[in-house]
Each structure stands twice: as C-alpha cells, then as structure tokens.
Image (cartoon, rainbow, N blue to C red; front, side):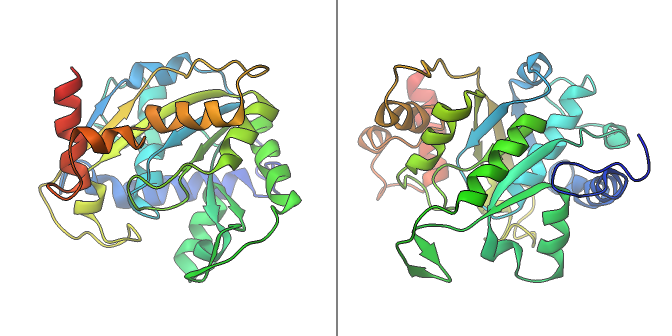
Length: 267
C-alpha cells in the first residue's frame, strides 16, 4: 500500500490505518477488561465478499457501537472465533469499512472529526436537526456517498436513526437495499447503553455483559420485495419490530433486559 494512496473520499489510507491502530488500542479494554463483550456468529464475517456488504444494527450509543464493530470485524477476519483477544488484529485492519452517521454529530468537537476520518459517511437527517423535528428532502450527495462506500467496501448503518429502542426503521435504508442490492447482515447489540454514556465516549459502568450477535444475511428479493416489506424484515432482524413489545411490555423492564428475555422465550 502506497503512503499516499487514498480511498474514494480522499482520505489517506496510511493515516486511517494508524488512527484505527491507536484508537483500537485505547478502546480495547472497554470491551475486554472493564466489560465483557460476548460475541456470536463471527464466523459469518469471514464468508462475506470484500465489497457491497451492508450491516444493519440497533443503536445504543453514538460511537461505542461502531467502535465495537471495528474490533469484532477485524478480529474475525484475523481468525478469532467469537472473541477479540490479543489486539494484534489491529496491525493490518480492514480499511474499507464505513459507517453512516449524522453530520451534526460528527462536527461536534475534535474527537468526532477524527472518528469521521476513520470511516464516517456523514448524512443530513431529514427528520431531525439540532434536537428539533424538521422535514427536508434527502440530500443527493448523501446517497451518492453511500453508493461509493458500498462499491469500495462494507457499510454499517443504524436504520432507526436514533439510539432509542423500538423506534421505526427509516425507509431510506430499504431504498438503499433496493437500489444497490448489497448483502445485508443484521447485528443485534445489547449492554452498551448501560456501559457508556449516550455518546459512547465515557465509561459509565464496569462489569457489564455486552452482547454482539451477528446473524446470517437477510433473504431479500431485490426486484419484488416492496420498501415496506424490506423495512419489516429489517425490524425483525435487528429485533426492533413492534411485535416484540407485545411479548414483554416495555413498562415492566428496560429495553436491554427485554431483549434478553425475549431471546430466551424464542429459543
């Protein structure tokens, strides 16, 4: 890899590699040490192609969720089975991993701007801006950037667009799937809300069991499935469909506890 080689967004890969190494080393103990990240399904990662893969996940913090994914993906590609032991996997990280993030979030301070360089595809939310509800058209540049990222590698997105549980899945993700036909891999996370603050930068509590479940790719008929059908498949896959609430009422337990009980009930 040449020192001056860049990705499609103009970022120097040499700098990106060192940022991943440094921040990966700094954050490793947040998932293996201070807390315990339990991983399932990491064997799926090694079966995926190098490009046009879309990861969909529920969302609990702004940054800790994505950082965990960088750890798990690189550890899995380096041959680790459901663990992130020995951070040697960070020495040659996969550099074509991107994640979709709100533009306003990634502009709030120096650290988010550095995280942005590591792989953020910043988008303008069409429904929310600076804490207020808004209505605006989708920015064509945003969808083009997601297309470029899929053509170059893997993209992580949080289709609910919020860290709140059981909010509706935004149709934009379904449109991306219909248009670009990526392999869609669901991930379900838990425990991050209890471990970290909302931004995912400050460790709030130690000794938390964090779960990270990678599921097999979704079966999608790109030509015949409607947007609504794809949205519903996403909601079930990331365990955020409204029907989950009927099994265990929200008012009785926290969302994270609800998901754990629901998995026991299902299996």
